[in-house]
Image (cartoon, rainbow, N blue to C red; front, top):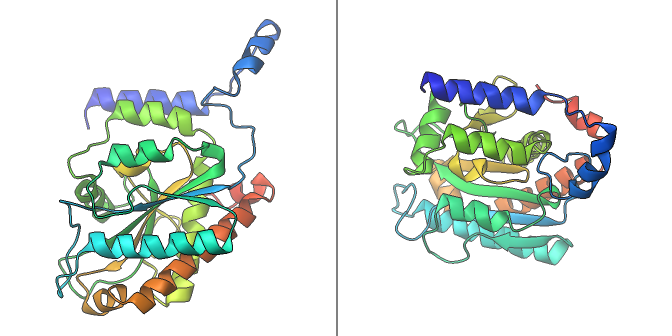
Length: 282
């Protein structure tokens, strides 16, 4: 990262944390524009819609397991199962960035999500992982940060980004739009990770994160979304046991049910006082 890029990021951080003062003569003008302002953070978050993003697709197979099943197909199968559960058991709207085996850019996935109200929507990108060591297994969840939790998270984001890099300018602009929802992204990832690990009986790989709960990395699909957003890696296709499970329709059903419960728990958490969420932040 260049000195100029670091300076831009520092300037953005100062802007994001600086208090906003409004003079008496400006109050009426500011009030009329508050609905359009990306930094208006006073409205409470109330979940009404979920965007499900099945990672990869079309010409991009994602990871491929030892039995030659492709990540893009597993992601899509789980996404469809989860969408069906949401429609059947809840009143949430559900939107898919892709419903068939087609390639779609990371920026287009975020654009689809951003058509919905950011303070009423949760974005979940569904993936499966890989590792050179076939013994590695477990589950991870991520939220966006320009600085990755560790080298593995940085390398994973670079691979998932598929040449669609995150520029400091994009980071600054989108963080202005996302001001006030980051705490909800963290809470959503914490809950998703906790519920999935508990219900699936899998290894919690978020334990190596600094807060031991949520990992962070510069995923391109997350930087553009203006609502709470997370990316979940459901397991390692390079691990034979996890590959067999994730390829199984029965286990995919189990994953979908766990994700539904996590979404409902997140909704319940956001209906309580914001200080309860902020108290958990690292």
